[in-house]
Length: 547
Ligand code: NAP
Image (cartoon, rainbow, N blue to C red; front, side):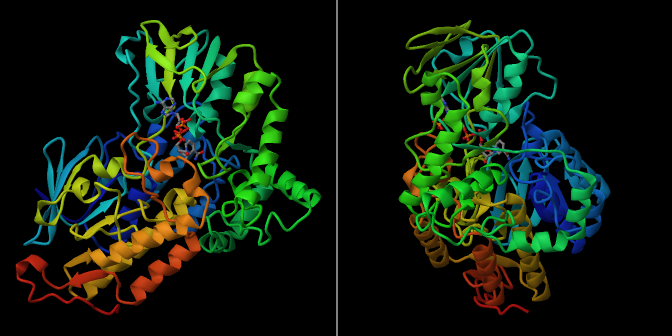
């Protein structure tokens, strides 16, 4: 058994950042990564058209000014291969690979209450003893496996967008199906449409989307960003979403329709995902949201030629941005092509897969390739896959049977010395996840430093604090329109999953203040101990002031 200070699970953006930070503090770290390379979701989601919907300069690490200056992004929204190049560059530049064990999937972690240490076991039988367990497993990393009747009978190729094969997939001359119209389905549609003989897109829910307005980054733009990178970072850290710009303080309802149209028009052609910040109340008031949704419906409708297809593709039945909207590059226009067909699953659901393809209630389709762009078991999927066994042999699955419960999104009572990065209870997917990742890792590193300086061996979330935080997360969500739509934010993506709202909607800046206040107050809501609680509790120091 290898003895380390921290086992980090996952070598995506979060895992690498945790490794870099903890190693820099002199900690011995082992990173376990199930994949064969670094990158996490960016390693696995290699489907055609995969691209980030946060601007490249903002979707990058802020911890190294040298790295910021030397890396040259080529497009406003980076493609998956470029992001993968970036994270590989980071791994090499900071010599991170030597502490990462690839092709190694965590099977179990068990907390030893007497020793205040985790024993982590991989599927290959290897084990580690570690003071800290840092879960950097991503929120969208367990692909949702669809289960249609007769699925195994299909004789063509089946691919999931979230585990895209490493070999090149050729669609030329093929009959292709895409099931799912979230960001993944919307991004791959226009690309595959240009290659395939015939493409059928199976849509269950029409999704809102804003044009990416992607463009190459000029040398002058690159120079300007690099000259003012600190200011740009400050703006991101202090903005509600981590995207760097603040919402318009006006209400969408306090301006004339003409003014609103101008603001929406400008946002449409430039802001991408940030369109939702055109007015401060777009996600707070249904009437305000309706103005944005109506504008987007008109815009989408205007680029679709066929009125029947248009009617199906224009989103309705949920407020704009209450489910994650997409940022697309020619998705709706792809349906004007003769070789692209829309199959509306609300109108005619899938009856079964067949050896040749898919049979719906109205038609039998034949395919060479079927792509599941059906999403993920979001937020909790990858946290609940391994056996994580805490105090008194309770498992995380049992603890979260009614939905995830955390203190500030980072700690869980009965699971001492376990830290979760950008998981449920944190801004996570409601933010530029890169900003949230770095924020949380710096915070947890300071907690580790504080424990070391004060000769503390165990920290643990307090159950009452957890209950208060979950209540607060719910209260903040109730102020918004998020609860008015079924989405992966609230567990609707998996039948039978607890229906609780998981991310924290109080914003990046608000969350940052809460984390800092918690540290300043001696890690309020956490119990810090100078000996394991299980060793009799005599050495327990419930409240230790931060140094
Ligand atoms: P998703 O947004 O969860 O979309 C899944 C799609 O599959 C939905 O259209 C869903 O329909 C459909 N679906 C699921 N199960 C189905 C079933 N049994 N039958 C028919 N349709 C089914 O997943 P995603 O597109 O992979 O995107 C997930 C998230 O990843 C995004 O929201 C985004 O946060 C992130 N992402 C980001 C980027 C980026 O640009 N940075 C790119 C890709 C993904 P319903 O809507 O009816 O459930």
